[in-house]
Length: 115
Length: 113
Image 1: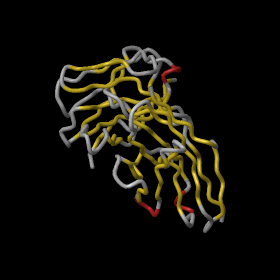
Image 2 (image 1 turned 180 degrees about the horizontal axis):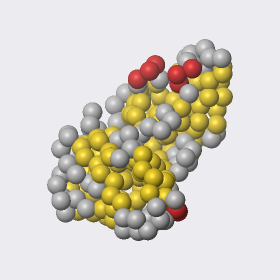
Image 3 (image 1 turned 90 degrees about the vertical axis):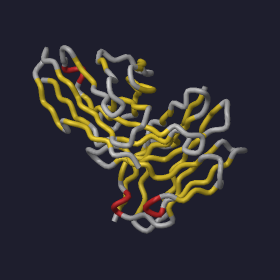
Image 4 (image 1 turned 45 degrees about the horizontal axis):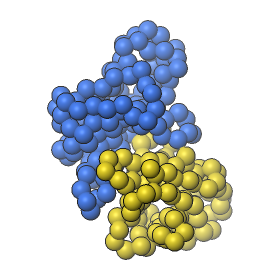
């Protein structure tokens, strides 16, 4: 099972500030993901990466950006936070093998509140 | 294309009763199917997965699910609910060339004493 670490777990920030949510995994998985989830609601894929220097937009449009310079690191950045960005952000990674069927493992999540 | 439908956004059971959470899927290729559990203020934890081996899959915490191709279903069951089972449960499907997971909208399970 993957070990995925997200920091910060909880963040309260003012409107207009720049924030970066950190995500690291220690299992060498090539694929990494960011999901957005409002309380009690479904998950929406906002970004994914198939490896170093690969990033793609997900199913839900997001004003955030991501980078993948190292295999283990997949940070998410908001240049100018707004109250509409208040949500939980979940980072994940997966082992894409025929047997595993792309099993995704999640971090603990980062709760972002923009005031 | 693939999709997941979880029947019932909220299921309530008594402690000791059978837990049944329903999931139906649609996939144009043979699917891989997953159940995840999410406790409050936490990420998602993998409960079990079906990857074309045995159709009855056993997971953690006493949960199991059965893949039924003819019914396009992957329902999650547990014979006897515990208070600690109260959480949100997500069904997910992957398949096709990009292997992206598609999640259902989730089912909130409450367990009454």
